[in-house]
Length: 438
Image (cartoon, rainbow, N blue to C red):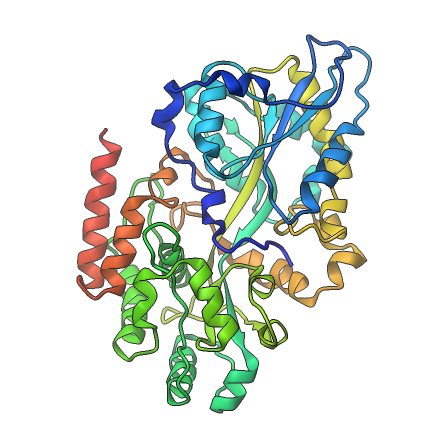
């Protein structure tokens, strides 16, 4: 499976840009391994712990096996922890002690590009059009990286919010696996009769991600948060209709009332204990639960919404290049090497998210997991980013909704029934507009 994180939204949120002024001397030492071979010293590659315990050791081995051409720098490797990673990057980049190439938050490159810190990837992608790498990306991924000034990053691994259900509990309730919104309500009603909740949600203010679920449901109905001009456009009929579907489940008792205090860890416990049997969750849910439930979970099909649409929220995590590099040619050469040799991160089951390349998705090792195949072939083509419905490409202002207090408040208003869907969307719209003006 793709990811083993229980609350992976923190991996994409890129908040705290105000912390850029708080540089710390310790960050200057953030590199390890390798020796300089020209080009003004070694380049730094910073990567995150995207998978399990196998991921970073293998990733470091792949990185340090890079042999640069004459005159180009070699590469050092540094694992950057998710804890305080926003401050780590902001401080290092502000003090010019940051990496030449890195992964990081999924919207990170879009925030740093307007500040003049990102080296656009257009020249690299032109080169990849010649060697076949460009055409190897899954549909729509590169489009998500393109701005009016160029490509700010390269897609790296994919996370998405998808439908899971416990087939054993559905059978016990005499319910069919849902295929649309109405059949989902029918299955949830049947589950309630056997004392099982039908819609898993975590809305804790510090460890929940129900705002992702709600956004995904709106996207499912043809909606979302931004228009074609990349401006917030929350209060729409399709968004209201989507949230009313969720609110109906809250009213009818298909949602655990305790969800407002739940983190993703709590919902994993719900799944494990069999007190909840359906929900929108991470691709790595089977790895996050325990006991017999691991074998009882089934990956559902994308639901057909009230508007006859299919859609889901996903996060194209990426790798970016920085202008502060010993050699831009060196950065590009390393990434060409890395993308040609990174397949082991998936074929050796390190727990990283879904691969961006068709060639990796087509390996026997990856295809051995039927859920992986379904995620790539069925779910990924209907997924959309935070930019929906107005576009595919991410942009700086999506940071306003990517795991922010405004979104947490929005979700809690909806799920606590303290505001109608329209009222909650109106409040969110006002909040986003006020933040845009700052």
